[in-house]
Image (cartoon, rainbow, N blue to C red; front, side, top):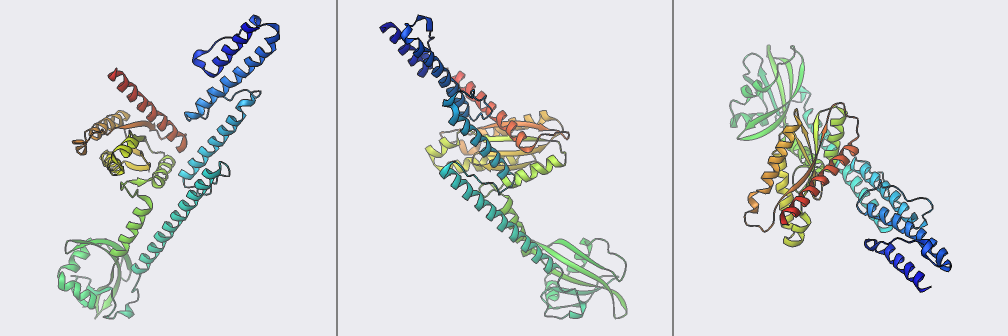
Length: 413
């Protein structure tokens, strides 16, 4: 009896401490313990299956094989896997700009997630409304003073009547005269910037950039072919829309730029990725993760951590003027880089990694900069979705990160 009890105890301990795993021979048990032994075998199998499944979930592997349906111990884990897979899908939809996603499970997390999505949706809508309003306002300004009958000197816009032959000024209102006093060559320079006009008696609308007093101006110009004192002439109605243009630019930067680094934000990055896929472009999707950012934040402060994030963004921007760098959030970046030879992409990223590791900011620091990357070539015939491509790039990035850790471990040993 004591021998059977000891065998069962040792086996039960092996169930909970797998490094001491032991086998159970039912035939070696006394008859009174045989049924108990069979029960322990079943429990051992359920525990082992549940442990393996839980470990896979802990590593983020939501594709792990489910335990058999008769394993009642694993039922909560199966439910957790289903919830996490659905939550992952919802997060991917949010990344694409779908702010209608809501989570109705997971308690306080669901409340926080839903509040975040509502705030993102409100913020994006507000920014888009402001941009639309500003563009409409600018358009209104550009089309002002269309009627030459209102050619009066107190109109704030510049109004000129000039000779169609030599561009000499025949009439100028007060605003236009002030410009001529500052810049006597204003009209000849302006006319050189205008495209070729249509036939006589026609009208044209233009928008040009003009440098005056070392400052760039945006001018909205309406031209009208008219007769003035029995001569062919042009009426010019000019509005300086520089302020409106800059306001629109600032709003667009706020809506599409990452505030900390100045590179594109996640929304614009995902928007561009979908556009490039739709247009069948050839490009490399590069997923970048900053190594040890949490360590720098915790040990040296978030100021140093933010500097790390900013400097990596600047190095990534040096890749190419036609590549798009976007910050996905936290310590993650995505870069979309057109290419003709994928080997050039790997070579350029090697150079950027070297530049990051040797950043001037590190000369008196007790830590290092480094990045882990995952590169996915995307050909015009690609049929994979953006989420699948990002998942592949993410997996390759983690493979790179694991390889570096293994290399560092071997070098230390």
